[in-house]
Image (cartoon, rainbow, N blue to C red; front, side, top):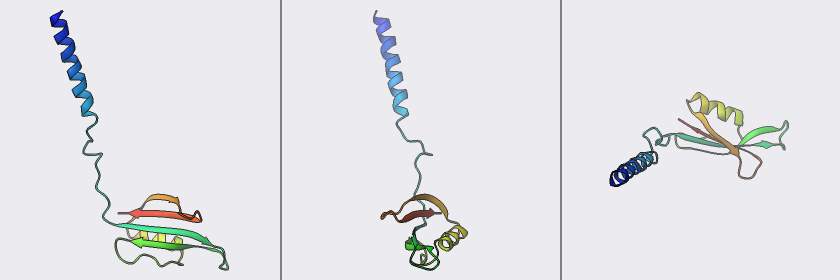
Length: 104
């Protein structure tokens, strides 16, 4: 009886220790944030003739971001050409366009 209890307790301790190891993040799960980020908010300008999709707002951690009112397609092309990749696209805060997050 005593030997069975010791074996069962040892097995339980081993299982608990093994399961705790799964809660520790692996080194591949921890990532560093990108060093360079560009954010573009693009929306339709239906008052222009012809209507256009323009940059409503922008920000960049490096260099000058594209100016508001310029072509969204050109702003995205310039950022992608500079080595940035699109990391996320969400609806803009006011629902009138898209918010692009690019990083490298």
